[in-house]
Length: 173
Image 1 (tube, rainbow, N blue to C red):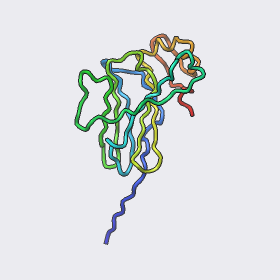
Image 2 (image 1 turned 90 degrees about the vertical axis):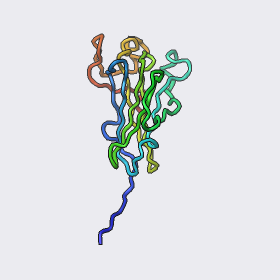
Image 3 (image 1 turned 45 degrees about the vertical axis):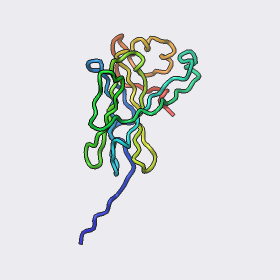
Image 4 (image 1 turned 120 degrees about the horizontal axis):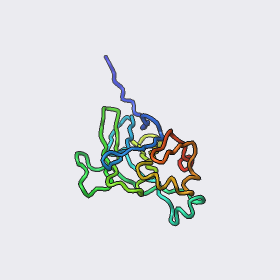
């Protein structure tokens, strides 16, 4: 007699826990997050957030801690972005234990530059988070801002593109 056991485990990220996105295609930036879990129910497991500055930023940026935005949940399964959408979150089941989510940013402006957080929680254990920093194409203006420069280290900027990855102290605990 063969006995099958079901083993349940909390969500684990697939890939790095931090990522820099420096490209947008046709005015759309796509931020991806993949996890494995059991149970893996994508539409209920993913939530996106964005780090937002407190009131008064950037004047008080050297003293103020960034805060998380209200949650950005998955859009309904099978739906697609409309012309009026600024943000659209798709969540899908990739396999029995793998699921993924994509946050798409449309009609990009410099205000879209920043750090986004993908939180994955299948109800077991603690939620896991992936931080995705969107840096391009509107990063040029912000890079020249002295207050922004104080947060960056290890990046080489040639006036058009950012080369190499860097550690962003805003992301560290």
